[in-house]
Image 1: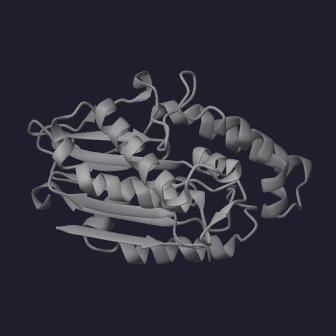
Image 2: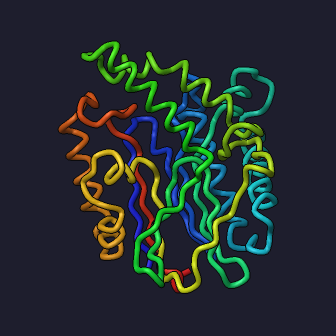
Length: 285
């Protein structure tokens, strides 16, 4: 059994994707594009997640025997080839936009009979521990300091200008966001999906406990339901997605966002964000 829901918020298109193949499932969450470049009416991040989606569909399941770093590198270089083939490399502006484009990613795949997670940036994976019965969250710990730095900058901006709009707050925090993005796929930074693969030291794999029956992969636009708006717990979200209620959860999230359009009660960088949730029972993959 597999349930999934995805919802875009921009007229430029949904920068999230989800997918699954034999022995693998994933969610991609393209980062807000700050290059200002449009490629055939879309952002560079939109095209990057399209390329990553195609590469994962080609090799995620078949690459089960590959080491995490080798698989991630193959996907990144395949995406780069697709994008350079489509848009060329002659224009410095386009080349820079494609180099800056990034995507969060969580990939759950079966390796030698076990289920393993590769997680970049802020796409959490939820699963129920078969021994304790608790719902646990897998996330990229290397991204936590970066996320914390962004939120601290946002809160400082709100203190300086308490009545500022989200657009103004975004302008005030842009220097910090640019500094964070300069750390993408660097040895002292954090791993992200891009056309340049991350260093080997940043690519980790988390092994789910034996006996796990299902998992949920979320983009951060969906995990807002519990970690920003506190509409419920991860346990409740897991239960409801297992029951096929992901669309209702998304509707509740959108209602909460509309009730706080300028982020006064719940600090965030956008009024809305693309939101994706994928629930999969392992015996369905």
